[in-house]
Image (spheres, rainbow, N blue to C red):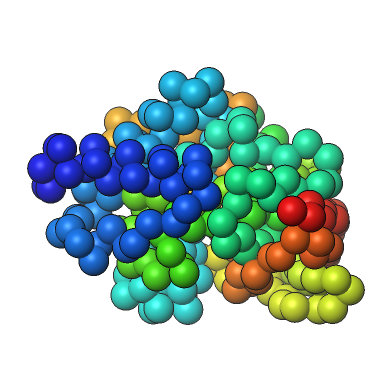
Length: 259
């Protein structure tokens, strides 16, 4: 692994970028950062936010589509921690803490039971109390989104905020066939289907549960898991109004506040 002082320095740099909205250069351009290093840096980055009073309320999963994995040269997703301070009350997305935001439509899983590995997607469905439509606002503390897989992992999987709709029962819903349309300012920007997320969004959550087990962690009852985007990310600018319309689990409307 990279030296501890290096990992600590990079975590502090990401935290400073978050607080000042001044992005930093790519971590991997200056340092030899392994995947293990990246998750350790993420933990140190999150610890600083917990010290500020935030609480972990779940996880987010990224890099769940073949296209994004090919772009970054990886063959598996990544994950970050969801904090209570990331949840947007109402439909006005605050922009003062964002640097270069993008949005992604996702299916969120509200967990009724904890998940202990080994886990299959059927176990995930059994442990889920409801699903919910989500607009995730991703952001990068790395300048111009010039990232490698290690950079986004260290940066808490490029997470920022999320807006959620009403919870919906899983009954009679095949999430692999769940469609979504993403509109920005009234124009259809992208569309997708649940199968784009590792063939089924619950498979994404199962991957997370099994991966966390290797870190002596688990998905906890009461947590929310964002399972991954059904479409490519779309840039978001102040004043933009977005609408994410799922086939059966609901719609989320939101607006990025003017600066």
